[in-house]
Image 1 (cartoon, helix red, strand yellow):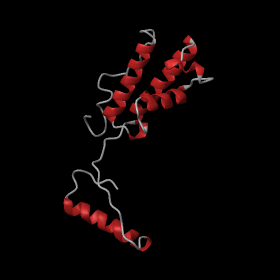
Image 2 (image 1 turned 30 degrees about the vertical axis):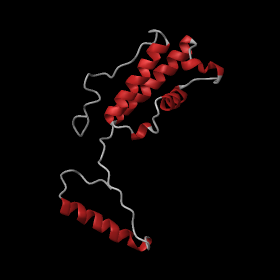
Image 3 (image 1 turned 60 degrees about the horizontal axis):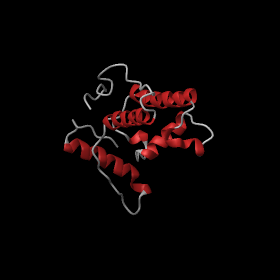
Amino acid sequence: MFIPAQCTTEGALNLIGRQLEAMRPNAPLGFDLTLVPHKKQRSWLQNRFMHAVFSHIAEFCATNDFMPDNLKNYLRYFNSDVAKTYYKSKFDVKSTGALSIKECYEFCEKVQIDMLEQTSGVYEPIYPPEKDYFERTKYGDM
């Protein structure tokens, strides 16, 4: 359940209370509640850029007969899904969906820097269309 920052404590408790009452018949032993700060979600354009990075890498690899970290010994093909899975593992990212706006930007940056290093500068990174691309969201700044 999302409770906006503008909501008063009384209002939040009211929302939670109504939810608990609705769920009470299905919870004879009680409830487990977890409160965590809300993270800003990426816009679909920001998410699309991240996927464009992996597509760009896959296209580069196919065009230049290149695979990161000598994966040729282990893989028959390298597409954008494989690139995403590989880099998630390499940079210990459990889920790209759970990344904040800033974390997503940093992940894309690390991935492209790694490609630049592995190709000795031959890989040409792609950039978001506007300077403030990752800062602009419906929630304001990162």
